[in-house]
Amino acid sequence: MNVEKVGPVGAEITGIDLSIGNNIPTDKIIEAFLKHSVLIFKNQDLDPISLSKIALIWGQPLIHPVFKGIEGHPEIIQIQNLGEKYHTNAHWHSDVTFEKEPPDVTLLYSLEIPDEGGDTLFSNQYLAYEGLDESLREELENRTAIHSNLGVLILAGGDKKDEKEVEHPVFRTHPASQRKALYITEAFVKGIKGLDSIKSQETLGKLYEHSCDKKYIYRHKWSQGDLVVWDNRCVLHYAEHGYGGKKRTMHRITTAGSKPF
Ligand code: SIN
Image (tube, rainbow, N blue to C red):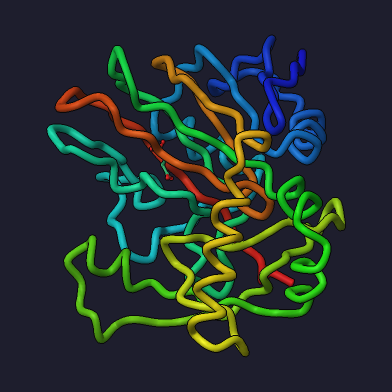
């Protein structure tokens, strides 16, 4: 297995066939994952059974709290944008942060890719934390942010009265590396606890801008058969559109979460 760094976050893994029946060096994969936070495996042939099995390298697959899974595989959601002017995930986020224990890891496998557009961007939130203005970092060191599922509920046609909120630290410690990462998501965060709403929105605005500075970003240009796996505890991602009405079809699995601290 070979590991090649692709940017401020992420590495491409070559020399591995992830389909069932092959010998997979799980320990080496996890070691590379903890070091690079995003792993790219190209030219993989993964049906839903294989994808679910591979996901176990990172943890138990979860059922999405709002979106329904594919037939026979409730743990796999299909992400498909066809004929839309925007991608529903075209915002910087970490997955499902409105849960008490958001998924640690996400696997995204590409089935159909348009000939242009549809890149996914990843931003390194360890570096974003470390690159923060010192006074802002001190001010926010023990603060929490309120995350809500309202946006996703509306998107899925659900009932607003099912909204729920959770509190997570603004800076999250990764349980394996013990490094801190900035942990805020524009789509799900409503405010920073203990700050008045003007100060909270102003601070969040600064954090959002900082968290996706181009010096922290790797841009993934998809090919059919790519599997990309990322660590939601220290990475934000953004699904860019830019392919008009062309087809882009992905299978996504998230794996068991842990309470951010
Ligand atoms: C996601 O935001 O989980 C999906 C990203 C993508 O479709 O590129």
